[in-house]
Image (cartoon, rainbow, N blue to C red; front, side, top):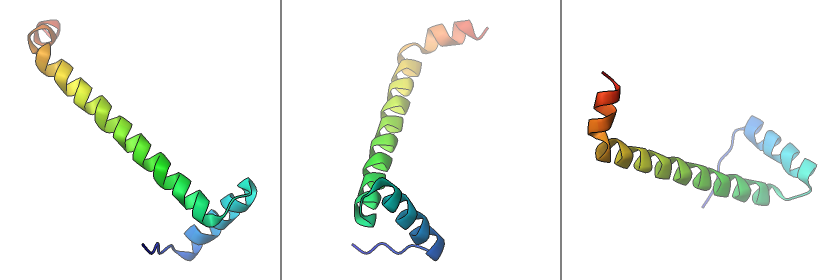
Length: 65
């Protein structure tokens, strides 16, 4: 995989990596892991909310009246 960054993105990544004492590659890998975990969590929350809305649709409807 090749990751193409703008000059500004590369400079920001280099600065962050240096501040944390890690390589740019490690900083990028951490960012990818964080993104995947965050979006997976969001998907699980959305799925759970959808199930609750379906299971309790009658009660939610009555509460809205």
